Image (cartoon, rainbow, N blue to C red):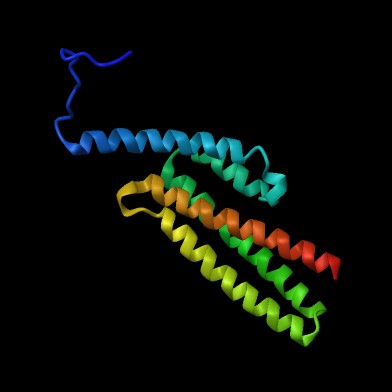
Length: 151
């Protein structure tokens, strides 16, 4: 169905109204995405505390970000534990390679996830950026755990 010459397209009184609409749409999309990503928490080994926190947040963006920050701290501790365990099992040359790989991974994670924190995206963009850091950290923690168990 195309637009005719007489079709009236509503105009927003200001760009602010349109921006709010898109922000709401983005938040709804993120909530749906979050629900999809919660379907596989065992893959990332996210904690029950995180799931409970998100449920308690009841879709409030600031509360969800707080949940993500707390879970990121837990996952970072898990990552560091697995990193140290793997380092202790490696010969000196391999240790140096792991140290360089870890430094490169941190730079990548931070740069990549900072990209998602679009200043024009409001709280929805901050939520996506925090989720990026959380998921990357949890994935790396699991990767290091698997590597440590193979050594």
